Image 1: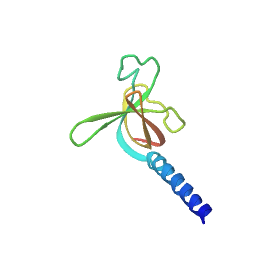
Image 2: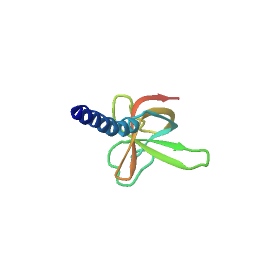
Image 3: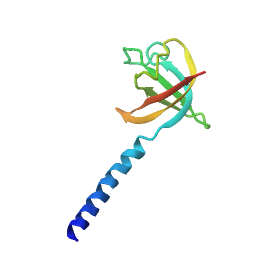
Image 4: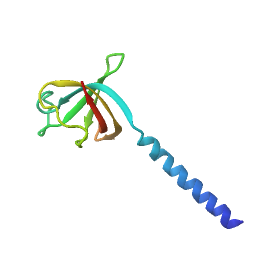
Length: 106
C-alpha cells in the first residue's frame, strides 16, 4: 500500500512538472510584417542579417518578435513583407524570440 502511494505521488509530481512545459511550447500564430533588423530597420548593434516580425495590435502598439533562423523562416533582407508566422515564443535578453514552424508570406 505504501509503495502504491509513493508511486502515485511520483506520478502526480512528474505530471505537474511537465504540464507547464507543455503549455509553454504551444504554437501561436502572429500576423505582421517581416523585415531585416540590420539592412531594413538599421537596428543599433545588429551586425548580421536578422529577421524581425513586427506585429501591430488593435491599439496601435507594436511588438517585435526576433525570428530564430531555421528552415521555415527564409530571409527578408530588403524592404518588408506581410506574413503570418506560426511558432513558439521565448524571451531572451529582453527580446521576444519566435521559433517558426510555418511562415506564410503574402
